[in-house]
Image (cartoon, rainbow, N blue to C red; front, top):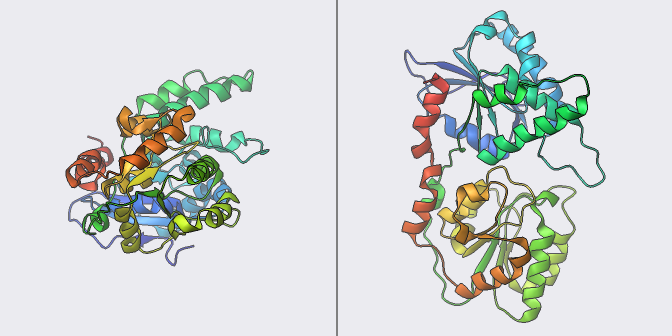
Length: 370
């Protein structure tokens, strides 16, 4: 738990809205999202917990935050929640004034579409908590159309299992108050890092989480085949690893050792930006992706993207950067042989719409309700 359950933003704007942010999973994309919100002309206060034990967070954060808010005696003009908050429980247990305040929820992901581990049975409680959270919210934003549509399809699919407990209008109610707002990205550390051009062998980048849903097996098995074919390349592997990371990472570290320039998570944004600008080609083999911040950051640094033609990626990039899975190895070889990075003009054109500078007015309007 953070030192202060209720932290006030250091920015104060006279006569502007006071916004309470509830985030029980303060890490990764959720954390970077909140750091960007501080650019908006509002006075923010935060209730957060570190990013771990997500199931307990989703079950208990709503009642916990309701009690803490009552104890604080503070009032706010808006309340902004992540989808890890059970908003229906929070609103039911919070001080009565909360029912008169617009409550907004931002969905970085949804539990209807989030993949479960092999042999695990999906716990519909978490998905249905997402649904009641959306129903209890006044305004909702999803980070991609794919996220919204898979959420609504998941509701329809799951409610068909409920027999006589039908909520026929749930999806239409949620759609009526939902919109698409990509998460703003801070490109400053990337933009001020000098790009490194190479004319010899291309550098392939992996900068995703070390988890099965990112499908590292397809990525590395394909590189093993390309390595055996004699095609030359270098490899940079970034991304956060976990206690039970897929074994393929350790196998790849051994089998591709002579190709590797860097292998492992870096905590420094400066070092992260260095490796992005050192790379030529960013590849995703993800089985699930609700947005794709890691890819967009790499593209901003000049990497050409090679992405599956599904999930959120068709919303982000044109067809020339997408592949069908049966053609993946052939396309990967093509891109390695191309040996070409994006120019600064190209990379900016592809990514600037995701910058906080571009998105801030839309976020301001969403929070105000305009």
